[in-house]
Image 1 (cartoon, helix red, strand yellow):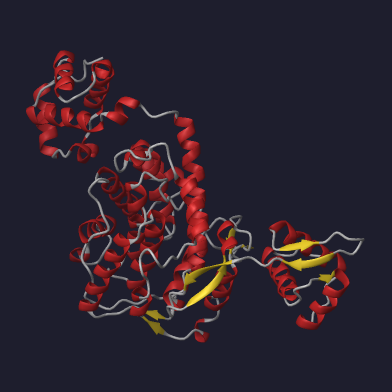
Image 2 (tube, helix red, strand yellow):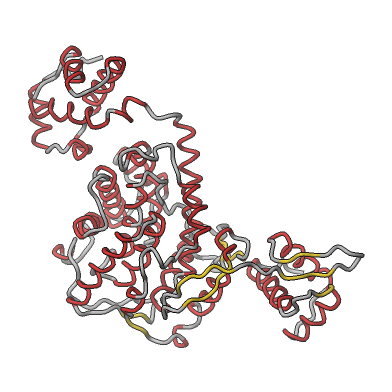
Length: 500
């Protein structure tokens, strides 16, 4: 007998559970088998029914009395948490345990030819599974829709929540780093190299980019291109690198505002659009989404108005993770740009995480089909359940990967952690003044800038290392121009090369 697919097994479990829920006092296995047959028309084998019941019991949604050899099985009633349905603004109940995965099934994208990881599993809530079935219908069965202002208007920051409380708490605990309370962006700077590689690759891959992670690392770290790589793929990776560096290096200044998001789009779209004037500019022309029956609005004034409203509501949300997911939902739904909307939303989703020194969201290993269908459910159904499950899974994955990286790297350098601003100021001054300061001069500058006497030797050594390591592609960190860097290199001659 051929092996059952995960989708078929999950469907069987769901059908068994739905049958059992119709009998509050529970049923014994023989009674359940008969009731299930009556309800579905399928006579399930005793062995199969027993396995499904054990699986449901393990998930915590079914309990067994264990009295005798034929226990009584009862569906667990879970207290509901009230969430807002974005589609109509009404309230509904959804099991709070869905946030922890207790009431989720497992969905494996069935497209074996997809470039997504064929072994990845995304746990889905019942709401997500239901909308997935709807958006997987043939295009001819899905009704054409356009932008619905009430989807955004119905969201009240601080009172409406797309991510349930239990899930937010769990994800916040996973994402909390040792840099909590430090200046914005401290953690992201600490893992900068890995973040640039992982997020550039993870986000680009969701756009069909053919670079592998190793290819991405080679391009970013050494400028080497894989044989046969396309110019578009290369440009996309490099654009991501520039956008991530912009976010991290300006962490204390970025916000969910026009300046930040338009700059993100301009960096991500550079040299990829037919008209360069569209880079970092809201669109004034209609756009179509080829695989969807959704047609975004085409009125420039309305696009402009909704764009500002999205940013204002995002700023008003009191939780960084909810902010992250909210912008990942509403920017693509509006399609404010001619192209590169989803990429912009994925980078914007990291604004609140970087600022709060939470683990960033890298999108590494997220199945392309899962993400695409989650976004499609927002477009066509204004339903966030499927994309939310993908978001939760993706964030858990990112937290796990960066936690391992942080452990491998050891504890952060306390000198760099406590004197970041002073180090950058001294490096910038040295370049602008076109000097190669001695250790004595660096020590004097350290004292003048408030560095404790006990820390000055370590500070001088760190400043010296930063001056030696300074290169053209990190000048933004010090707010230096390329011309200033070149003039400094010329003025100091061989002093830097001969420095120990």
